[in-house]
Image (tube, rainbow, N blue to C red):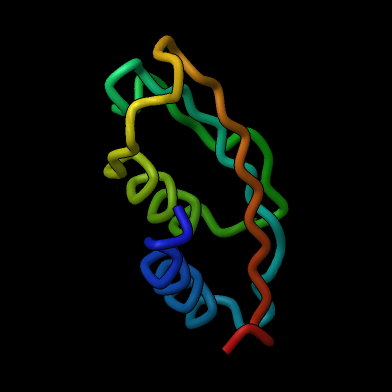
Length: 88
């Protein structure tokens, strides 16, 4: 996720063009399959009221490929990210 943060940030910057006061937190929830593919994903919680931002970030998360989980099996992840226009 950290390697793709610039792309998540681009979703946020597009949201700032629609709402200059946009800021908050998003919690992504996803399940990784034994080979590292996303089995299921969603935004579990958010304070970001911009639907296009949410769509953009969730589409990006759904495109990610992860290394296989250590020990095999399915792994559930909850990953919070905060967005603030002071970041740039």
